Length: 331
Image (tube, rainbow, N blue to C red; front, side):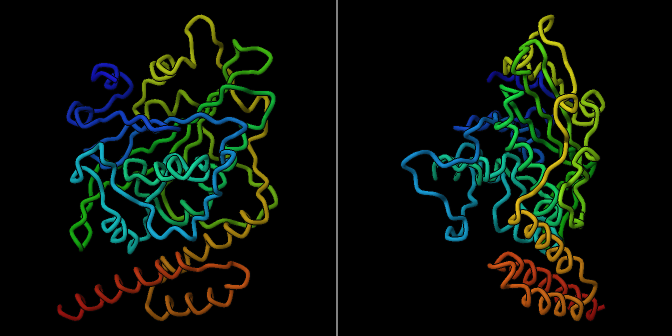
């Protein structure tokens, strides 16, 4: 993609636009920004086969893969976060958040691996990442099975903060204020009708209440309202991907043909519980409270299964607290 076309998609200052890279992967595109060290936008399509393993391929077992995160060889190493730097950010409740979810790209191991490139990651608050955002991703993935719509596209991105912050360990990071998804789909019986929907969520701690059906509608926002917040020229992007043709397509809300709700499986219900336990660990106010949280969650191991990631956050948060305590004692 040439520089002029790439710049035409976004309304950022020139110093930011000049650090944009268009990265085309097997099942997604990333508009990666070296200035922020995360993508401004990621594009993917959703079909009936999304999330399914290709015939003849071995099903991926994430728990048996030790460290899938890696830097993108197409971008200079210094223009990406390392996983070690993300581990530092984990001390403060952040996580490497996928823009295009790994769960949507199980076709082959090579395709799944591409979803773990650092050019697909953005700093995301952990309870949000492991909770409501998981439900949004699952809802989007299910759109491929809806016979009323076709040609489904999902654009994922974030709203950078105005400022960068530096951790005590020296990691300079911009923590986005919000994440968003823009979904487009054609009406199966009337190709001139182009349905759109925008989901807009704060990148902050978000404990999840237990529900049989989750009303994701409360996170929607009119697409024209999101467009300036995300600094996007959306019609230009949609025309590039041949999703929208001026004078032919008519925009309508996706809400007109389907409920924006999600009924999670039993496994995802348990995931929502596990998300809240991440919160108990991360937002402990003292070492005593942290130790109690870790003691309590271990009692849930039979229900939750592997607690590896909770253990990692416990270790990271404890390390941060001890470091802060040590610094305070020196004063």
